[in-house]
Every structure is written in C-alpha cells, then in structure tokens.
Amino acid sequence: MNELELLQQADQFARAYTALTEYRPSYPSEESIRDLDRLNEQLTQTGHSALSTLELMNTVAGSATVASNGPRYFGFVLGASLPVAAAADRLALAWDQCASSADSAPGVHALETQAAKWVLEILKLPEQSAVAFGTSATACGLSCIAAARAELLARIGWNYVEEGLVGAPDIRVVVSDVAHVTIKKALQILGFGWNNVIKAKTDEFGRIVPESLPDLDDQTILILQAGEVNTGEFDPFDPLIRMAHDAGAWVHVDGAFGLWARSTSRLSHLTNGIDAADSWTTDGHKWLNTPYDSAMAICRDPQALARVMNSDAVYSSASADSQKNLTLEFSRKARGVTVWAALRTLGRDGVARMVEQHHVQARFVAERLTAAGFEVLNRVVLNQVLVRGFDDVATQRIVAAVQASGRVWFGATVWKARPAFRISLSSFRTKERHILELIDILEAIGPRG
Ligand SMILES: Cc1ncc(COP(=O)(O)O)c(C=O)c1O
Image (cartoon, rainbow, N blue to C red; front, side, top):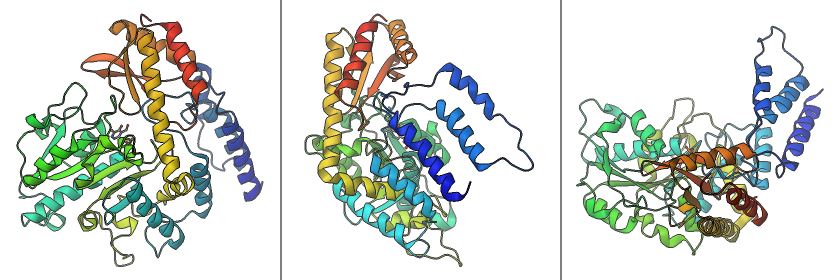
C-alpha cells in the first residue's frame, strides 16, 4: 500500500468513527478494554505492514475510546472537536511543519499570528499582549508563572535568567484555596513548594473573598480563576486586581475554560476587570472545541514572557515573538492553526452562540434536576452543574449507575469535603435530545440512587 492509499485508509477509518459519534457508547465496554491486551506485542525485528498497524489501531484501540468527542459526554470540561478545527489539524499534519519561527515555517507562523490577534480581540485582552500557543493550560500556566517570577525579580534588580534562584530574593505566591490542581503542579515544578504557597479563603461558591486576601507586595504573584472547575465561578477580579496592583504584585488568571465567557455580552460581566491582569491562560481544547493540544499563554508584556522562554541558539535565532521564544517547545507543532480555523469559521457570533447555548443548557439541566429532587450545589453562572443525591452514598451510587449505563458519562468530584458529581456542558454536538436523555436517565435513577 503506498502513502496515499494508506492516508485514504486512515481517512476512511476516521470518517467511519466520526459518522458514529452520535451512537457510540459513552464509555468503552469492559470487553473492549480487556481486548487492549492484543496491543501487548513483542517489538519485532522486521516490523509489520503499515496497513496491519493501522488496522490494529483502529479495531483494538479505536473500540476502547471514550466518546468525549460525542454529544452525550458531560465529564470534566473536555469539549468536542469542531469539524473545521479537526480538518485543519489533519491538513497541517500532512505539512508536518516545525513551527518554531517565521523562518522555519512561514505559512503556519502567519496562521498563528492571525489567530493570536483574534484571540486577543474575542477575549477582549490588551492588544499588545503576547499569545503563546502551547500544549495545555498546565504548560501555559507554568510559562506565565515563570515569566511573573522573572519579571518581579527584575523589578527589584535580580536577573533571574542569568542568576537563577541561588541567593535570589523570595517571591511569594497566593492562590485560591480551590485553585485547580494543575496550578499546584506548575508551582511544584517551578520550585515554589505547595506548603509555602499561601491559600486565599473562598466563599461558598469558590470565589476568593477580597476582605480576607492575605497581604500582598511587589514580591507576590496572585493567581486568580476564571471558571472554577466544579462551580464555574469567577473570582471578583475588579477589587482583587486593584489591591494586587496597588501593592505592586503580578496577577495571573487561570481561565482554562472560563475566559471564553468574554466572547458573549450575556456572560462577560462575570469577568469584569479581568483585562487588568498581567497574564492569562486558556484552552482551545475545552470550550472553543478545538482538538488537543491547544492552549494559550497570554502575557500583557511580551518581553516578560519572551525573556524567560527564549531559546535562541547560534544556529537558530528568531524574533522575540517567534513561538519557540514564547512556548516551552523548541521544535513544535503549530497549535494555533486549529484556533485560527475555529475562529475564522465561527466568527464572533458563532463562538458567542456556542458559549451561550451551553450556559442555557446547564441552567435547564439544573432546573430539571432540582425539580426531580437532586440538590444542585452551584448557581450555574456558566456551564458547570454541581449536583448531589440524597446523601453521600446515594451520590456515589448515582455516578456509578450513570457510568454503567454507557448512554451518558459524567464524573464524580468532591465539593466542601463531600462527594458530588459534575455535569459539564461543553460540546458543540450536544443538542436538546441529548440533554433530555441525560435528564431521563437521572430521573429514572432518582436522587436516592
Ligand atoms: C480551571 C482549570 N485550570 C486548568 C486546567 C488544566 O487544563 P489542561 O488540562 O489543558 O492542562 C483545567 C482542566 O480541567 C481547569 O479546569
């Protein structure tokens, strides 16, 4: 089989998979998971045919996929893949560009440059900001926090890039006491130590309470949230950022999915004041419904990010706005291409419609579940519905029963030290009939599980 025939075969498998998105079980069967043993092969000396490799992948791993690209998957905040974004990804794969800079890949550099402008426009963030297209909100958050530390140290005369941390003045970090685990991960990689990080108190909704914000100064990074993963709530940016900037602190906002609330006037009030922050992260692969890996590190001062992320070498120097000088990667895939394709195709209205639709769906689910006797724990300001059954045991039984149904999927969580479950509306594929199916299933199981 030649290269083109092989690609055609892959495309046929992919098309068949996509055509069944609607009907696929929301989670793979036990049998298909057991069947994954077939992948446990010896590495051979002479290899196999390319077709047999593709067929094995399709039949064995393909049968054990989670239908997160489908309409009845409500777990985490995964989002599906918009057709144009998935198709653009496929096309860019054929190009196999090393998207380090304009010189190394002019075409995709231009696409990413345009995507960056649109991202700032639709999210209403300062237009001079740098946009780095990275793999995840985790990696992008890490980059922004590294830039924050280097910049705060530079302001007090310490050259972090040259001198590192040996003998450096202390930089403190203040985070919400419900900060996402990946902020914890970024801070532990960067050497802040979770025990040394100061946790700010939050209210019943998971928002930092400005009155109980610890003292800040010009050696502090304050990390806020746009979209708490359980409740979808937002920190009160206006007062918090004002207090931080009055003290000379740096403010970073983790907006992995919540930042997209800024795309619609119906929800953007939730983010009032957020544009005054110093850096932000968001994902495309969550609420913009681009495929993985698609995330953005956005930094008001492009030099602050470029200084700490620079990877120029004698054989590879490029402008400060080159993606290799803004992201963690040196050789990299042009991750901004799918963002470009999604934004160009949807336009401002299309993105706003998708985000609003998920908000409306979430409120509907909350209303119907409340009427059915479930306890909805959040105000549903965004797209997340946080729910409990009659008691903790019932809550766990409900999650297990839903997951066993194979018809819809959502996951368990813990809120205020008690079990709960979280329903996320974040797939462009989810229509009214899928929501009604979810509600039917939950009504049949009932709040007592
Ligand atoms: C609020 C928040 N921040 C950060 C992340 C991490 O995003 P990623 O999985 O892209 O690293 C998530 C993922 O669920 C999130 O919900």
